[in-house]
Image (cartoon, rainbow, N blue to C red):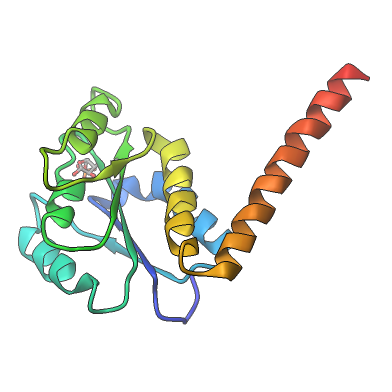
Length: 166
Ligand code: RP5
């Protein structure tokens, strides 16, 4: 996290989601994206969700990432109360290990979209990359960082392939 004004908010339903969502904040750090982290629950602290979501855009945030498990109403609840894009990360907590959260996040009724990424840590990482890509649509430096990230990712895979073939 930096001292700059946050562009991304990483919101999660419980501190039990922190370990998973650390993948997201680490990746935002890699991209140099200033972000804030909040614990807000759609069902346990609905008033605080409203307070946060209704002021998020005017505070200069560009993207909200919402990690939540089980019935996972957080992404939808935030999306209902902001014009910002909301990316939902289904957390693999609870007896259904994230399938419930994935369906709750992706199956938003028409009119209130939540962009749903993969369940768990892979999704938390991808949420940060997707947020970076959204920001990059209006930020050439961020677009360059994403190009570099993708090239580096490809280089590592190619190196492994060539290592195996040798
Ligand atoms: C959801 O319920 C949270 O996002 C978390 O994944 C799950 C369990 O929460 P805790 O009981 O661990 O606080 O709201």
